[in-house]
Image (cartoon, rainbow, N blue to C red; front, side, top):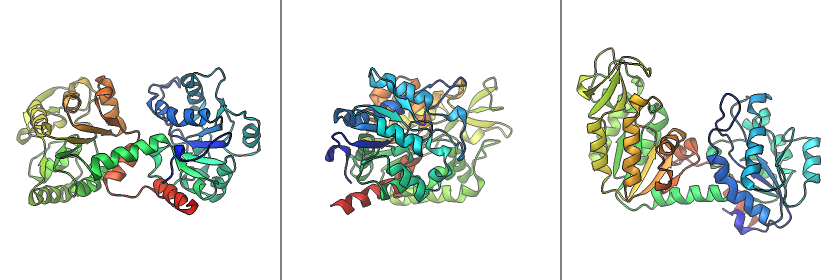
Length: 400
């Protein structure tokens, strides 16, 4: 794969696909701009080469229709402030069409403009060749810096590569792939994976692949309920995926047979309902009341997990330990944040919720790397090939 620093961008039209799908509050204000900041090195590199920079991204899921609340306007304003330039980042009224081409033609070297939400066009998510061709016509060089959507076969990350004169990866994509290789393909051992979150169905493929790579697996979140049920514990009214109970049990047996240590909770915080005013209590996993639900791991489990991670040289973490958005159910997740932050291991954090938990605790600087992509990160852990990465590799080989 070629990267942005491998080629000449001098005074060229450079289309940079970023992931600026940032969270907004009810007034349309950006509440977390980490994804925008992550793309700054790539954008600034193109500006240093006096290029005409065209930035494009999606926002939300408008399903091929223009949705005012999902406009890229607030993102364009924030990007302009972060670039610390005197000129604003102009927002195009669309991402393709005559008006967009005219704006690109009139763009001065060293200027940045942003295209409107890519997903306002149905051609984006179905990887329509005509839509991809129109995007590619805007540039001399296409740069993919959107790791978070690398697992999507969309026009702006896959189809466009077939038509752009030159296609390369940006610095964010480069860093994501480097840290994945360093933590997963060639790790310092022991290597531990901490897997949490709500749905086992999204994580079990990754866990099956993890058994071929890791030394320890630590399980938390609502998905742990499926594992608890698989070993015969009644989880009361807790969320769990009944159809995946046999798979969870198979994973536990495989781990034992292969000598991989797999940890599940030994105690938990239970509540009579999912509400911040719910009645709560701490119980061993064997004693979950029939009409109650598990909302977090307990302190004994947190201590067990801390001891399990103490000797690890590499830690990969995806998914919280409980419903940490409610204070009473946040202790397990925040205990894990502290454990990973205080470790001497190479620590890779993947997934939006995990990132939020780390940020809430002010521990972002104490993690080795925080991935920008939840779904793409999981796809890599599952051993899948990322379509966008495959497209870039194919493009590079065709230019050799």
